[in-house]
Image 1: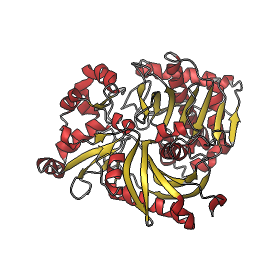
Image 2: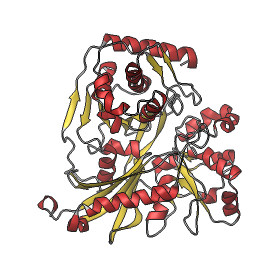
Image 3: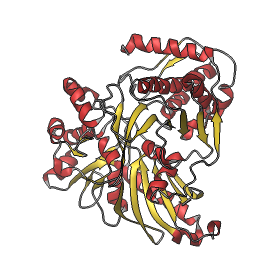
Length: 480
């Protein structure tokens, strides 16, 4: 018997850009078993990024099967499941068959940038309603593109068979016995059609984007009886859904209001949890992290599109296929790297330049350019922290998680730039741990400390000078 107990277990499904993971935790947050399946991402046109909906479904099922198999007979102790997912990816599917009618259009996809220009004069109103800056990364313009360009989608709409929603809604429809067409507040908000104030679809925005309300999922709380997940002969209640970055806020238990939470994966996000809505943030994002019927938790968020995605780009651009394995050593080498102006997948907050061309400023060997790309991630996160400091009290620490956060050199640079200690849990699966905490009902015995490594603040005047020059270069190009 796993850890000698009959206590209930929880299954966390972490569906990310490059892989689906399934992890099983006990009620103290201890990891007992895991499974993983990689998934593909294709770029058929410049600025496009797509995935196959059937492949995503199969990857989640396979990862869950592997994790549950690893428990043996103790799989019967799994009493709840939760889903954390890439937030802004979306697709269309058939209400009758569940078959995808479009690709999964990734959060990285920018195909609707030119189409969105017609709404620039309404950008502030959209931002005030949704908490989001007007960009092609969010779902509403992706749905409009499908309606305009895919005959199968238009036919399904005419036949009243069309369902649309964030990827989370599609997976709930396909994986749960009840086939619900529902959406949680965090994923709903990333459609740019959902009002953070009414907590529902906004009729004015639906009309603006030309979106028929009947194809949209029903809005439900974060913690909710979504349905029944059948896996390896088990009927597991699915009790929580949240975005990947926002689920990571709960990795340590209930979030600390005086900490900033940083998740560094394919993209990177810096979030502050707040008990009250922070109001309009002109150059950052706001929204609801969690709503469970009795409690609502809000957030202020800064986003970086080019984190792991920038390392992938680097490996291809410089033909450094093993760049991630070599970075730990390169980040410790002495020597002045160039600056990297990082617009991979678009320059997000606080600059908001979706068509920004990435470039190096200054020369250097390939290893120095690789260091510059990592430093650009730290610089973008610090730029967002600088912006947050204008709106809310300064945090006392940074809590980091995510695959790219395993780089000690990145964490040291974040501490030096911010002047704040950086705390990193040894287990990088912060997203899965967070959704497990929510799906398990926020157990009081959840281990909020765990094993953490602390990166203390240290003086790095050369690094701070590079950050100053990097900001000056971006200011010349963006005006920010």
